[in-house]
Image 1 (cartoon, rainbow, N blue to C red):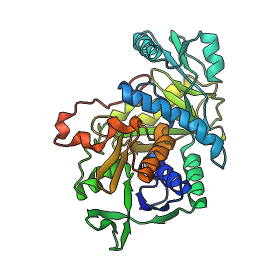
Image 2: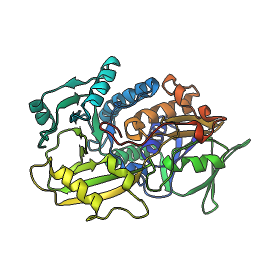
Image 3: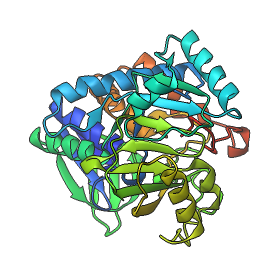
Image 4: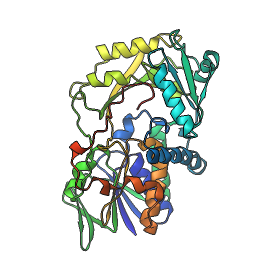
Length: 384
């Protein structure tokens, strides 16, 4: 079977790799270098923490386990780190954290309360502020180095015979004789199946093939799809796990660097006029970060990113037409390896997997974007 995978982010590359390992003929297409879309600006926290829908929670728990399995199989430098995660709350956010811990405990999700001294040991060289009153440790969570994971997946896909090519897809035609992908330059590639894994661009490409994939894809100021990450180059921080606090989220990055996020500031980010290194948003992130570090911050690189947000907040995984498989997820890093394997298995065997039954594109049939009321503005402790 010949499969064209459109989109070389973590989802598309994971699918391409799993198909190649299964012995299928795979062409992975992207309009630029792999991982330059959503994957390049993700907080990359592996979790099932705020996945309130039971089916979505189960899927993300399975995704966390898949990372551990893949890490034992995939050649290359380590990209997945089961570091655990620490959440601390002040008096205003403590009731919210308590409710979340109670909910997750009822689901059997690993979480425990810890005291301040243990929280300090778990977090590493951070100064926990005096107004922090409660601390929850999530030992099964972790993080990924996205560039490294993507590089490992792509190298293994190519090792098993997959081909990567740069080409912007202008249209997909699922006709009676097969499925054809037309590139911007007019070249046409044909295949037995196409996997559409183009993140926030999926709605437009799917619509051209007659497939409805409603998404929140706005790129204006205030859009829930717009996010901001800060990459702290110096000083090196001895951060030992993912940390969520009322004003700042942090995770380790390669080379002793750190990725930071202040969710409540996203509403002020205008992609048309990105925050400057010395502007008010940068100064506020620096202030918050300096409050928890043993020494001042000297270098933060700010990057605007765009989330892949299906209109109802949940992953899309399934055939939108007989030969076009659609794959979109806001939880792309957590779910990438799992979705890669499940989607490849569905394509090869023709049998659906129960884990994906709740996430088929058919759920959007006959519905308008206004029919979905999911609030996807991530602004509070533990959200993403």
